[in-house]
Picture 1 (cartoon, rainbow, N blue to C red):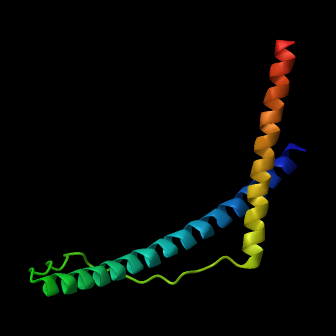
Picture 2 (picture 1 turned 120 degrees about the horizontal axis):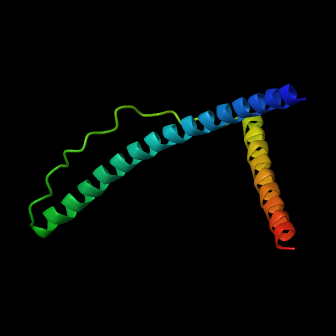
Picture 3 (picture 1 turned 45 degrees about the vertical axis):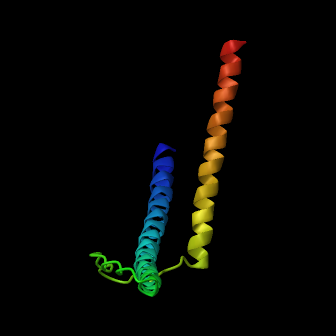
Length: 113
């Protein structure tokens, strides 16, 4: 029976690991896309500020030495099946944590009583 539980643990762990890696990859790509948008918005803001400063007769701001992000990432989303698996993994984790908390409360009551 022990080999069966070890096999099950390896199967669930590998699936969970793959899902977490996919989510991590997606978050990194989203982060790169947001950095690119942030760079573009800063340039637009600097341009608008310089326009206002020139109308007021003040010297414009010097351009920033920031470089644009190296690559523009394509934002990937999890498929419906991947989302369901991820929700299942998270739900299983929550259930395990709740079970552990309940077991600890019962053990405290047993030792206290």
